[in-house]
Amino acid sequence: MPWLRARLRGQLVYARADEGGALREEDGVVEVRYRPNDGRRYSARAANLAVADPTLLPDSACTDARAVERDDTAARAAPAAAPAGRATGGRPGKVDKAAAASSHAGQVVPAGAIVAYTDGACSGNPGPAGLGVVLVDGERRAELSEYLGQGTNNIAELTAVLRAVERAPDGRPLLVHTDSQYSIGVLAKGWKAKANTELILRIRAVLAARPGVRLVYVPGHAGVPLNERADQLARLAVESRRTQQSGTLTPPDALTPPAV
Image (cartoon, rainbow, N blue to C red; front, side):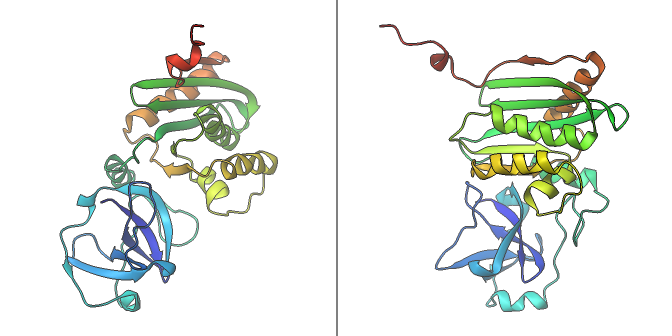
């Protein structure tokens, strides 16, 4: 069973999750760990846990544990480790890209989920802007390199997330990966936006209508292949001043009407 990072009374912990990314409860409690390698297992009341990072981590992220007869009241005394690639506290600080890339490589993709990688690019800021999107559904893959005209890097990053959601088939889980902590902050963490408010409100509305969408942080320029490809597509759009696309996630049977 996978893990995810959650907050328990203000502290970051590892919490058991199901394959769909929800906390795994048994009689109202969830198995948690304060450190991945200390060999101690705790139980926390589900009502006291809040998901801090929806990225699913494999079962091996925490070592085999022995049960400890303590519950979440021990949280005040147990130290917590910061999740890979994130800083503790409010807005993220300096990212350890190597640690974040390692954590990302071990994530578990929910069964039946579509995976998207997005990126934005801008020559100047503001200046000519473009975006790149890679969508993967099993053996099918679609790519988009879209020129946006004059804009900012944040506009390009946000619009890339929007395009991924718009182009992915509805009714399926969708994991949208972005290396823009700004995008995740204003779209999913309640950061107050000082600019791009109209675009942000539009994307929030789209996300609200698609509850199966999860935004996942991925470190930029850290050797994550599909993130690197999204970056290439975004830069191609800026350099060529053109919009190009390839592939489709629509099954062939859905494109051709059945014979009468």
